[in-house]
Amino acid sequence: MPIYNYQARARDGKKISGQMEGQSLQAIASQLRSTGIIPLDISEKKSSKVSAVANLQVSFGRPSSLNTQELIFFSRQLYTLLKASVPVMQALDGLKETATNPALVKIIANLRDSLDEGTDLTTALRRQSDVFPSLFVSLVHIGETTGRLAEVFNDLSTYLMKEKETRDQVKAALRYPMIVLTVITVGMMIINVFVLPNFVKMFSSFGAELPLPTQILMMTSDFMINYWYLCIAIPFLTIYAFIKYISTSQGKMLWDHYMLNMPLFGTLIRQSAITRFARSLSVTGRAGVPMEQALRVIAPTVGNVYMEKKINEMRAGVERGESITENAKRMGIFPGIVVQMFSVGEESGSLDEMIGEIADYYEREIAHSIKALTSAIEPIMAIIIAGIVLVMALGIFLPMISLLGAIH
Image 1 (cartoon, one colour):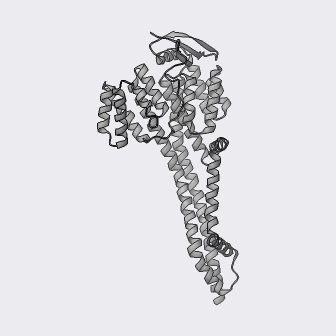
Image 2 (cartoon, one colour):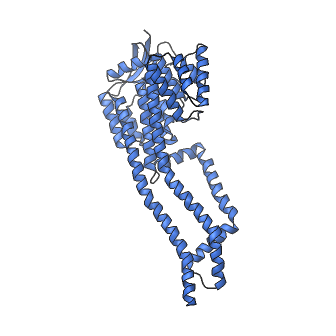
Image 3 (spheres, rainbow, N blue to C red):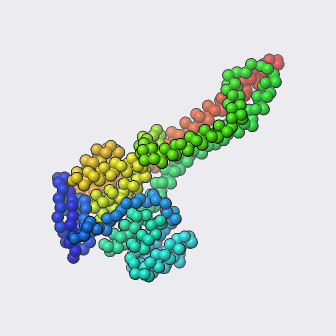
């Protein structure tokens, strides 16, 4: 059996290193964890840090010609076939026959051609890096080297499915206020451009002094009609400048930091990022990835540059031999309950299990936060709409009432 060099951290926080004989990297990691030692880095002896997870860098968030649902289908079907002891090449043939998406059929055919050339599945997937994210490829590599390929595909399908559910929930929560604000904006533009001018002509013909709400509406309508190009250019240029700013590293960092503390939406965005972090860490932990390497690959998956920076700082602390709990507390991005669960997991030697519990807990919290957010947004939207309707009503009906009184 091959001999592996390892660096790890004992329960007392001290950094230790040594060598161990085992069948695979995953077996060494499991053996260390069983003794209460948290592995930081494992590599085969006489290799230059070449491990099954040496080059994990890219998150699931990169562009892909397959959507998440199709990646879930691909992973779930391969898990089912491999679990039934179907060889990989035959499994791909069967998957190709059942796939309905032409793009997926072509991708599977390319994988099959690569395997016919004598390459392994990891290399075949890596050749299509625009389709399969690096984390996906690297976990498959771990599955191949440890003989747990079916289990890895099962973990990937579960990960992707829960990730999609979380993303859909957050999008649904943010969609409602955006739709309402869009409808209000379009309605105001139609009223100011097509409705109010007719009332203005009528009121002007009587020569009566108009109340303040009506004067405000008239000025607003005149501005939109006479300076319509500014009404289009100002919002467009503002949005363009904002997009350009957040495309810079400094702008993106500041914006992502603000999003975590944004009124109403900040809690939901933070919970979503923590869920993604915990779920990714749980998947890599079950695959036997050492903690230091796991944090390196997980950092880009959270979808927030500020949190990514903090997770990388956590990784640096772990490399120095500090505990996960100590680093998580110092970063200031995790609520107290997360830090406490890290502490319990480290002290009990069940860190992977606790990380999974964190992901499950925050998935439930996201559902509660969405309900609370909807409950908070509905009265706010109602107040905004009522205010606009009140101003419009006063501006239109007050002069009409005054004119009727003057006639009588």
